[in-house]
Image 1 (cartoon, each protein chain N blue to C red):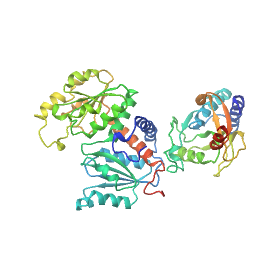
Image 2: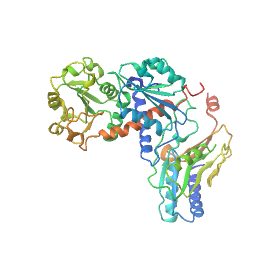
Image 3: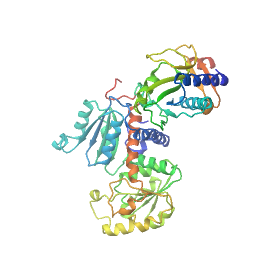
Image 4: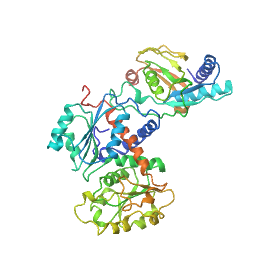
Length: 180
Length: 311
């Protein structure tokens, strides 16, 4: 996916969110750090452009809710959480860049309910690459990208990476082999 | 990160920044309605306190609980220690019970280091004799960075009973590590002779130091550790080295007043001064929980072998 593909996908998802929820009222977007919060801000921009009303946007770091703490050599790196509104009674759309095993979303669901009791939680992702390990599916998908489990899907965004792109890469080990 | 935190020398400048950055996230957790995350579920943290402490013990206890770890408080009175059990046997008992981390305060310098020989879990020094109190120094750095936006180049005076202060030692080392300029201020009898080797300045005149400061850090006069007369009288000490109402006016605008607590109001700090808006003493306490959460998370959140985990 290039920058135009990403832009079109986000515009469509914004329309789908509005269609599903019959407008923007009561809807809030919460992006999962690090890339999801940038996508959530862009989606909010699209929604405001289409509907003329702003939706609250938050950022959620799920590090403390991961199921693999203590299984990696180093404690996982922490990002910022910023939810400056009450989620109770709202429809919260979780936003992430890539949906893979579903474990991040499981952690995000646990994290989110610590902030309140949303009326409903929906999930929007830019890329669904398959290989789910948990019974989780997305409500809004930018693009389904079939992958091998050992491949690496990388979403680059202008905000953090300087340009918009979705890249499917060979696993690090074999790439190093090819290059060497 | 090193498996233990015994001294500021155990952490690099880069690691200190990581500890402070991670604490930022934990402070956000502390501002939530539900101030608890499941990060250390199933881990056991033991508070082993051979010396009296209120804030440090409660701070560590809250930090561990907010990380969902199980906490055991072991104080010497009313325990096997009062029956004469040695540190080694206590350590081996806690080890056998599967403690993942032991937070120790002891009146003997070096007791935490000795403890690391007998246990597999992480050891965190919560103050040992007149040696170090690294978590206090880290929460102080966090508070300074939070309020003043930087650490490099900050001018900090550490005032009072430096000789008996493990806080002063840890803080001096930490400030030097991060490029701040620390000055120790006190009567010659209460400044250790080797202080210049800590990478700090020394002064005996508080009034001349105050106008150049970003932070004035007052130490508690530790009468319980002073076995001889280090100054003629408490009144004279207060007059020469206390942060009085008049003297605090010498500080530049925006400069902070800090104190590790518990305060002797009227001795090292006037009661009115302690309650000024520029005094961030309560913030230090609040930030202490976030720093200790950060440390427990970083020390226990990796896969280094722990008592409870399969190695």
